[in-house]
Length: 170
Image (cartoon, rainbow, N blue to C red; front, side, top):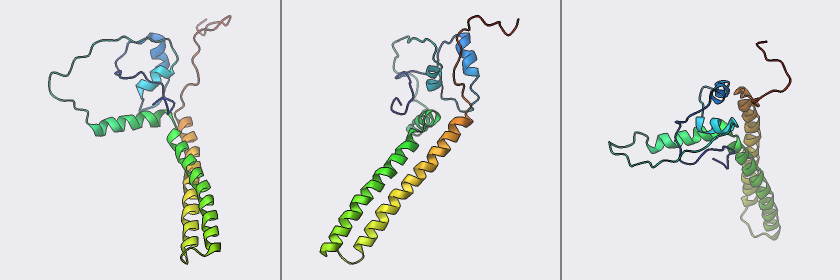
């Protein structure tokens, strides 16, 4: 999660004790699908960790199967980051660069006559078009990712205290 830009505490639950100011700040988030583990740490207020010994489950088995855990992980990644989209864009760029190298190799092989007829054009078109498609999808994804982040309307910052300004109630 840190690689995706989400600062979460390892191995903790969603249960927590929060100040009124932190809860009020959390209430300013207008999202429907909140990933609390990431948002609470993103608020920026002072926090601490209370460690305790957690015993093994003594009644039944967990009702949280692998499929739900993977969906939860994907929700956490997609709620906070467009890094997967950037990864696709980077992959498209690398494949496009690789296709240029492959095209040069194919043209040299064609010049020396060491290839079967049609191999050069097939290799060039598959590599180049594949790379350009990935790059294009990544670039479109960048725009969609920016729209996604803007549509959340997350608060940019929280003011802890103001100095010398009259209060709103006065």
